[in-house]
Length: 617
Image (cartoon, rainbow, N blue to C red; front, top):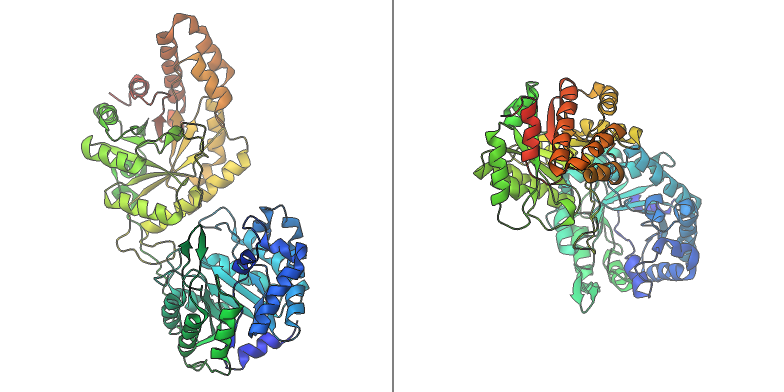
């Protein structure tokens, strides 16, 4: 490690960073399904050749080829055990290419997974992943580090902490923002720079996502809130579709013209990201050579973070009738209903009107069951509340939606008057009429619970005010029959910590199993709604016992159903309802409500169960 980077930071002049590595490797014929970080071991000559091209172009700081060289991303290629080796090799390649003519920074990018509170990866776990990468880069003799293309402030902080736990080498911390100057989490550029300034990063900057015009706008805003040196590495414009390829069209001259403006706005370090080449850096270097940043590094007042602490949520009892009964400790009743396959909801409405007349508190509108095309849960719930006059629980799955889409859905639901949510991660698609259907899991139910809880405090995930807070009653799922009970208990604890205010169990057939589980979660003290499934036949019972994960049907229940098999379908249905009534009577004093599910999605059997124990007419 040399002091070259520290000297560049301290001299007050503008300097040239290098440009893209990934798009350059792609242009050299490396396919996108290859681990680009592994090339440090398998094709070191190619990587070193690209570094040398940037040094010849005049880059004074070059980044190692390690953007994705963390254990999480490397695990996709079975390379997590070689994390340190890959990073150390990258550092040595960059140093050999620089040959004393440029400073070397170890490139560290995001993990590729969301961390808490919006994902299952803990902050300390993320810290450990980043620390392993930093250890490898230090072994490769880098002069400092560049944290780039982060959109989550918590993840950036985990990476920064990991580096600082090992060394005091200079750190360039760069986030990525959209055209509006905000991250994908909604965090403003002002909040980013004022917050990261307090951490002590040596240089603060922006890279990737947008072209130079939008980045200049964001940089001018950032310069108002920090006295730290600034950096900028925009893409070569936004990619355009040319045939079957995505091409970055911004010319070297165009990029250089914006480099000049960025320096005038206070940038000390200017280079390029996706789509930029040594030709771009050569022209940028001509602009920055000998330039001095327009502002003095000590003349800017650092402004406090703009993140709002939010407001107190509306009291639970005032958010909905369902929330009111939960808050008062009253027993609640709910039935599962399935949205229509088409756009006409007459059958759904008939079932919901029958449930309302029977005195049921709410219907639980399912979200996309059985991978078949159906009306989604939110519009179905709007129709039910508007036309059937019955409150709904909106079953909302994280599957097939990214976080921004989920936020949009939830805000739309709030605007339409929906108040009760039941948030689940969702299962991968099962075989159905669309065998090629895929799944998207951007965040899980714990992350989405955190999102909904923040909306109830009037904040988006970036900590920015949204105006009036939402009034959601937030529910979560829990499985007393989970094979991995410790993991289920841990996830339930995280759901409650994230803001879950009630929980609904998977269908229960063994009261001892639920009672044991309730003892284990007693400390959390949120209302538990037991799931009950009236069995309709022996085949239905055997299916639940053998093919539905997490559902435990005791042998005694199977035997009762088999004894009635010869008496016909009506007798088996009657026995299933009797079993459900007995189970609910046994558990009624231990829980705060019941949700009845049926295999057919019809409510008549469910209403018979409730009427039989006097909780429905």
